[in-house]
Image (tube, rainbow over the protein chains, first blue to last red):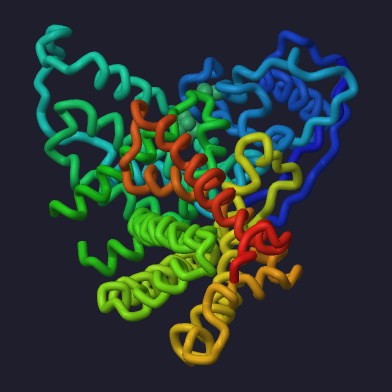
Length: 247
Length: 227
Ligand code: SF4
Ligand code: FES
């Protein structure tokens, strides 16, 4: 099929950037979105042009590197799907597809579609860890955890840190990401030691990174490729408020 | 962490919005109860008496202070949030289908809130100031407060403004109610649906339909024939 791609090109952090239109012929239905970009880049290189920079790594929906804002939606129109798992069969011959980087003050563009997501790393280093020594790998059922909590923690843990929640939110709020990380550890026994500090420190770091205030619109949940529930935000708020009351 | 740091944090800011919002919502129920007394066919006496009690109760005077304080805090935090949120996306998307992922009302609490605030000012000017402060309504030889309500609603402009504001209020509450529970962390898988249903009933049935009945019934002369 033949498509028209309208892609954001930006030389570096300081460049103003703008859209460039690429007619894209011979796209196969089986290609994933980044595979189509690979083909486009090969063609650009053959013509002696600068290839389009875009993030990707695992290409199987688990690393959280890929991050394209496709036709107005983070990771494109397909629910619960990362950019790398979005296949071209979801588009029609003749479509024009607009591809932009995540846009948020907390995620400055480095080049083309690549953004700097180190704000998430700094939020993680502020509290997204446990420092209790849990010993070497134990027998599966050594630490009793209610199934409900284990499932809920696992759901939260499936966050891949892609940043689509920030990208799709009208307030560029990072609440869903932080909520997933705080939730996951708050539900497990290993996370109890730093439970209160974690909520306080991660929120503090989040606020300092230039993400906006959550107004519970629900866009994050709708565009999250791992379908992290917005209810984790309720838990983050609870953790934060309790920590403040008790500390 | 100091109280100030807490109040300025993103979650703390919203906790203030949520608590003040819920407090103001409780007031709405009280206000609705008072207004419903207008439907008694007793020449407006039940309502007049009720208004009289309110103005002369020390307890209500104290609550009144908290109400104004809540309103101011709610608005002040809203302005801060809106200003901060207007800076978080310096370069805008050229295609942004946010409509597919969230509702207009959840995204525009500032607009619905501003309409409500404007209405509150007009409304206070119309009833609260003359009755409670300047005393130009409700005294000896003056129109009583029930007649004042009836007259106000016979003005089509005022009735229309009232109706539109109530509609905005209903949508504001529909998002705000469940949102405040989430903000306060009083929400989980078990209660999620119950809370949002309760929020919608409160917003549309109790507050929405309840308050909308006054301009409609008074404007068309269905209510208030005895005073
Ligand atoms: S919560 Fe979802 S959208 Fe946000 S970073 Fe995690 S996986 Fe990505
Ligand atoms: S490239 Fe790893 S999730 Fe898409």
